[in-house]
Image (cartoon, rainbow, N blue to C red; front, side):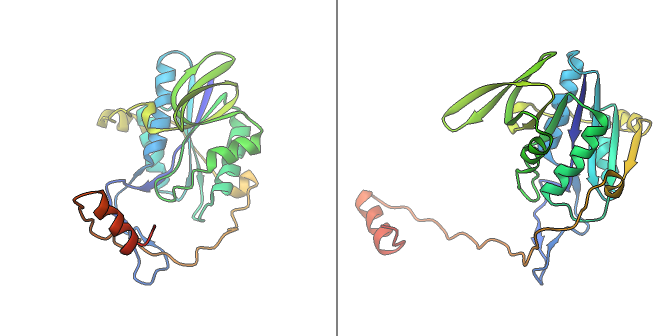
Length: 249
């Protein structure tokens, strides 16, 4: 059984991103980059399923510039068997990403497609759903528990007011949430060994996918600073503040 795991290179979650002075884009020059945390959880889950004997091969795939190879090497060091890099310098929208992943999946024929529920740079939370729709596959989003069998996968996901468990026929698309697992620390020897694992190259043109933008970002701006909060002595004062200052009632 094969698992295909998508990983994205993003600005490290510890870095505070700033907007360029002209508002044309986000300034990511000379900042630390790393694997998207939700994708890291997806890789960890695939590796755990392999360690449990449920999966025989893990293929990591990343889309983007040449530096994405570093992200793929991290996935290989975590336990992925091989990697596919769709190299392009173009800005990729979620639908384009889904189409590229579909093209890779049609070639690899995985039984399980694992993606992070969203990337922390654009927070779109669209790619997994679009991929499932394009491939006409069952999907489960925001997975907090995954139990894989030979014919189906049971996915527990968080919903408003509790949890639900879905039984999906394979192949299936799953997007991972924070509570699914805690990714392992990648040791230096594993990173060195990852350099020997196969990494295949492809381009959007070779996969037959057009990367032309369908949406245009007009401007970027940082959110307004939040106002300092105040304390009130009682309910009557709270109502007075809401009515006369905040003017929300």
